[in-house]
Every structure is written in structure tokens, then in C-alpha cells.
Length: 254
Image 1: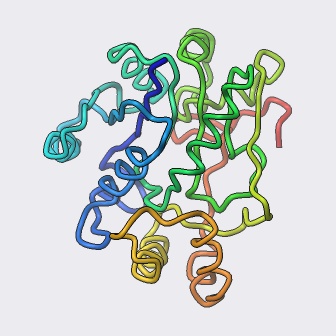
Image 2: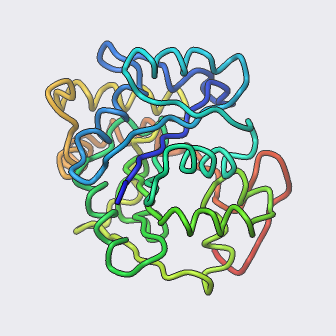
Image 3: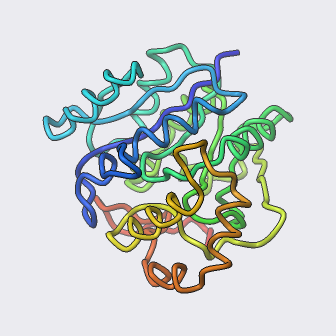
């Protein structure tokens, strides 16, 4: 079974343009996410899913430097990009990662993939928010991704890739991975300059160049430094049911 980590990445972030190639300890954020995926015991292939826009050429160039495959697709239809990337490499299981989460823990990736193997269509640690935001992992079988690609029509579902699972939960067998402690209010994803400041501080504290930090190390470092937590505590996250391209949609989920 080929298990592929597909990392979505683009330069056109609204709040922090070019963030995926922003410096973190002397290398771009994208490098750090790739390294975490490659350190996972369950991932066989790593692929970058970016857009056909010329602005994203630097992402393709960076991937080539690292020897990582890159698939280019529609700028707005991220679901189509994922489906295209999975099809191109013959993936049987797709692990969805994003290039703005440089503190990903390989062990958490393995936990989510392991949950998928227990007869599920889809597994994640995101529907039940217990891990810090930025340690997000989703896994689904390629045929499930193909079904979502065929059925999903809302702007949010096309943009957020797996939103259709929440829109139509009765259609899927879903497994959720929950952290030992409730730390879901913590934030280590990079959407804003404040987020980048927090992640850079954590990277230095945890000596991220040595190895991808473990999730419990990230949590412990933040809990010991409430002033660091406060820096980006007020950053709003775009909900799964909201698309930048269309109106908010509701399907009975909070």
C-alpha cells in the first residue's frame, strides 16, 4: 500500500504572502514540513500540491532542490489538486498536510494513519480539537478522496479538500485521534506575522534543527511561556465551512 503525504503549498497567502518559504532556522517552512513527513514511519512518498500560477514557481523550484515531486493544479480548487496529485503517483492512502505547519510531529502523523487502518474511510486529529492548531493531520483512502472529488460541490469543500466529510458525515466511517491532554487552544500554525514569531521562538527553544519536535515538547514549551502563547492567541482561524471564494455554507455542523 502506497501512503503518500500530499502537502498543499502556495505563495499567495492573504495574511502573510510567501509564508511557506519564510525562513525558519535557516530553511523555509516548507522544508520543515517535508522533513516531518519524511521522518514519519508510515509515509512512503511526499508530494507538493501547488498551483499553476507563475507566483508559485519558487515552490516548484524548492521542491526540485529537495528532490521532492510537485503536482500543479487549479489555484482555487484545492480538492482537484489533491485528487490530481494522488492519481499521478498512484497513491492508495493520502495524508493531507499543509506547508504552514512546520512543527508537525511525525509520531502524530503515524497515529492518524494508524487510525485509518482500523476500517475507516477518513481519520484526523482536527474534528475533535485537542492537539494545538498546527499539528493537523488528515488521512483518507484514495478511493474516498476520489468519491469526495466527484460529489463535493460547495466552494468550501473544493477549497478545504475534506470539508465534504463534515458536510455529509453519514457517508463516511470517521475516526478521530485525540491527544492525551486538551491543548486545542494553542496555536503553532503560520497564518500571520504573529504566528511566525511564535513558531520561530519555539524552533529555537526546542532545537528544531536537531529533529522535528515532539508534540508534547511543543505543548510543554508553550505552557511554560504564557507570554509566547499570548502573542497569537487572538488570531482568528478561517472555519472549515467558509470559503474565500464564496458565501458561508452550513450543513448542520458547528
